[in-house]
Image (cartoon, helix red, strand yellow):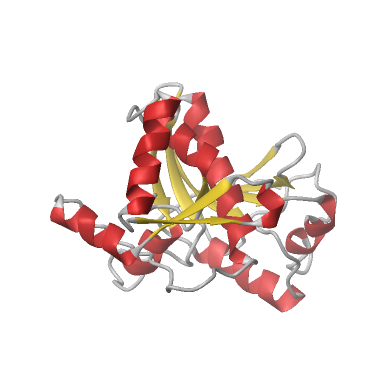
Length: 235
């Protein structure tokens, strides 16, 4: 729960099941209720979840983890107030992305945004930007690590250019998964650089100033994923 800003009851149950902690729903429900009753989890009901409970970890919950020997690097604790309605859908969709990777059985590790924010305080461990997450998967006998960015809202073109520049300057990662919920949000980031190709079925040109490979993932989260691979020196 600490890795996610928010999670629904069913998401938390699936995390517990896929991570091998608890698969019995009755026992899970009892444990969740107990954590809420003791103030370690916050529970609320928001209209658009059709009555399903929404959870977030409390400050006492973080402190309880530390007393058990689990020191949470991100310490991502919301203030004791109603959460921003804007943040909740984004956090829940990130949970869905992570759960999708877990279901494939290939996800080896996941670094949440809150961890990345702390790592970026140290130049020796910093990434080019604060990504929504960094996934490491084991597939076909090899490990692959990539950044995950989920874009729910439309940004200005200068902001998209800044995102592209950060990705192109990244030295710790060679692959990026960029997801949007609709086609309306797909074109602007792909056109953020002069000369980039707005036709998504063609590979975007590779950065001219770098010799490393880049894999650009730029598709709608609600449609079939395609990967446009770009190798430096290839047209």
